Image (cartoon, rainbow, N blue to C red):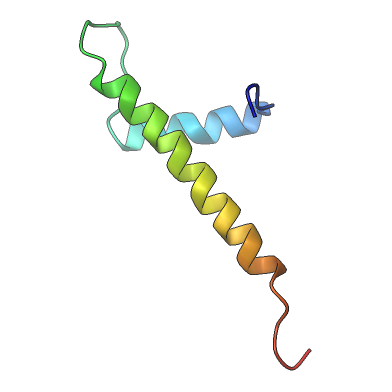
Length: 63
């Protein structure tokens, strides 16, 4: 997946997470740690979302 499609509400929610984690920056610096943190956060959000969807789709006993 090279070009994920994100809706405006997805961007807003991600921006809130970035702000909460202290990963936002008004001016770019030579230090890329916040950029790396945002990349890791995006991966974390994707991983958690996929795990939740997989858990949701598991057959439940007794159904």
